[in-house]
Image 1 (cartoon, one colour):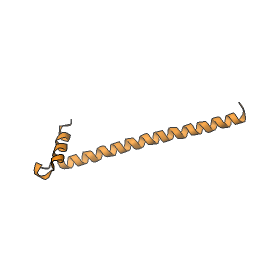
Image 2 (cartoon, helix red, strand yellow):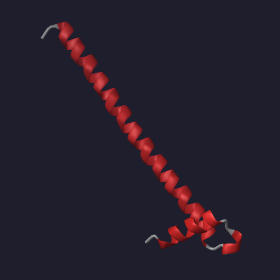
Image 3 (cartoon, one colour):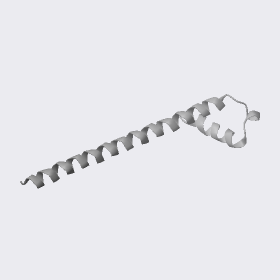
Image 4 (cartoon, one colour):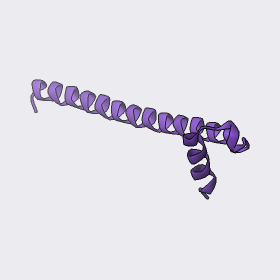
Length: 71
């Protein structure tokens, strides 16, 4: 294998590693964001779960009732 071939191979390996690292980072960010959204949703619904119907809009009542039905 020539010196140029070796150099090109090393460059490709570094590029592959960067791509893998970026993909992993992207997956981590997606998981973190999904977890964040779920936590915000849980906090919101827990905060309205104990409120009476007169204190909520129709949409909030429907969302609360759907949330409370979940196992």
